[in-house]
Length: 213
Image 1: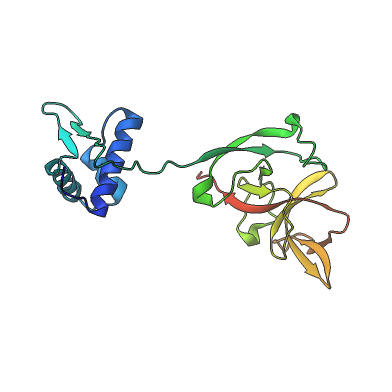
Image 2: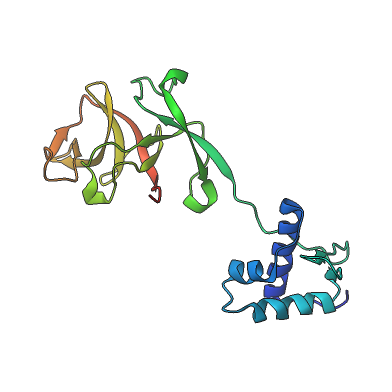
């Protein structure tokens, strides 16, 4: 195992090792090619041959999925980073005292979020709302989407916020008109501006998740 690995070979080895650990079996050449976007299995096979030649993989004849990664203290591989999945509570009606009174009965469920991919910092103040209605279609926020919000952030003009109006949570764009805070719908069917002085801003949207229907 004296020969070094190219960056791509290190990535292929890490993928094979992690797949082997998680699934108790190595990936097929087709799976390697699909994972790295190779146009054919030939490229995947070439990397695997190089790893076998350099002693990082072993081939077990007469077995399906016969490759096995060979860890070595002198040439350790680094498994591909695993996504950090966090369950974010989905609230139906957010109580006015959300920060201090997160009542279990207001939670409709949880949505699992890959915080690294979305760029969201996991926090007890993070929550989600399922979008209801079409008042925000101008911002491409559709019914059935999940808005991921952070409680306690100071909204800036242009931010999408969750606000409590008539004891019901709604998503709107936070704007200022003549220095006064307002909430703006992003659909001409709805009133343009709602004064925000007496509204409770419950969170600022930090990500949006859309289910593929």
